[in-house]
Image (cartoon, rainbow, N blue to C red; front, side):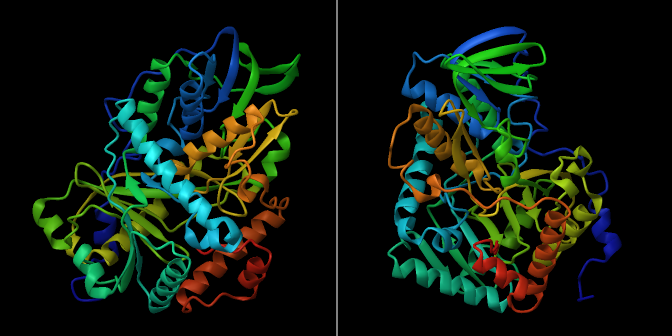
Length: 474
């Protein structure tokens, strides 16, 4: 153990008394649920799902056409799942990062980057327009290297951005420069995206979007799961436990939850992600790490961490473990994983030994929908009466608004700049049935961890996935 390092017992003691609830949702200002649907509803557009994807879809639909009758149903409460549990990183990227976009859609990457930047601007404008206070801060994000091979990879990525003319607002930082921004002895270099990421309070965003939808006349029914989707005349019928909605068009925004369009289900799997928040830091603690500009941070490992400051000066620290449940079945028992919390706490103090003795206040987990290309996909069903978006793979805080626009374009039958994209017109490869999915995901996780500890060298399995377009490097 290095001099001054915390022992395992001391690390575990920092978790004593931690609240096993998402920090963002542990808020007395959490709004009351809207009444469940009982009986029948008719509407022009039914939105199924009350996370970001569904809330943005309902809001944008009313902004496009104030006379359109829009109903939104949510199985529990708006923002209770991934939309209220994430780290609050609202990125401009629509492709799960520049590298993933370059590998998959090099010919349209410049357009995707421009659309993503415009989408982030539109999010900020919508927050102002609707008076949504969600602690939105356009602080940017630094990807940090904590190993020499990661520094080489960041340097190469910056070179690729520059050669394509897509490095505006991005700066490569050496060790001294990155540690001047945030001081950790583990940081070797950084890639600072100054404009392409905002930080926010994710639960407040969901609640604010719900309030804005209600204000525009969207009829919202919470604690109303959709149980069936069938054709009904020229439209669709969606059954719920106590009623039914007849709609001309339906937008499915259920993401990690099983799609009402069965053929979509093999395209996503749930992966459980975990996070901690510290108690509020003192001024001395903040000075010790020099985190003055409040950027978001993430390390460049395959098994990566993401971390940021909250409005009340806590550090949120998440990531690393990604747990796939056998069979891809959602399991509420996986919302908490003490062994992961202990691992994350140890990693936290490795990164910030200056904060030894700081204590954690909240610990939680939740499921993310991931697909084999690691960015959202889109489609229609029932001869264009139904549209869906899914597969955001943890980067849906910003991209879900773009997904809302895509679904509405598809439902309108319009060929737009968005619907013409190869990214929108194509689908990811499906995951194989069990036990092959379990074995393949397990082998991939082992291989990624091995690459992290072997200078980034990808083994035969990872190189094979790369050739198949299934490589995962973040």
